[in-house]
Image (tube, rainbow, N blue to C red; front, side, top):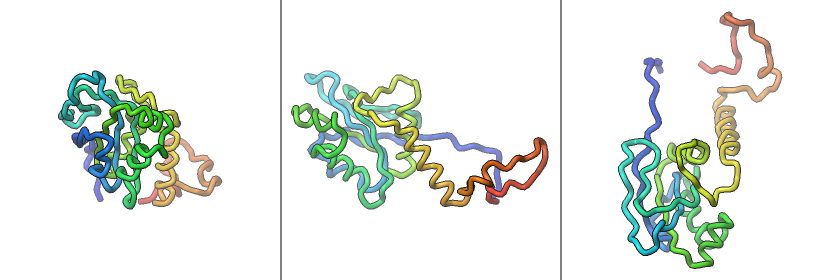
Length: 179
């Protein structure tokens, strides 16, 4: 593969939904990203997802995001994660909202490439708030990325190789870079 000098930008596809919590069976079967929310105004109808033209966002009108999650699993995926949330075995705050019979909805983005957006949404300062998210997802996401890079042989797992000094401005071999 030859590097062409072009860097591909992140591009978010449009969300699917919104769907009420009782319709969790309509969610993506494989990996992806999902957001659980409720109506901002309970008396107004839920809007449709907006075309964000590849940018972050594009949530439906009258949709207040509460929790964002992802699944990397091909076997269980987003559908299973939502089923667990809506049956009280996922996030504690979502379970409490279900017990209070709050009208909850979800939107989802299919694809393993979209699952990585969870950490981005949680840690950018662009006005997105997910009050039900409590765990440090960025740390979890970085651990997953490092593990995948180690498995691909792109970074060393041997601590000795990680700390070898390399003279500046030389083309010294770097054993942890695969070609």
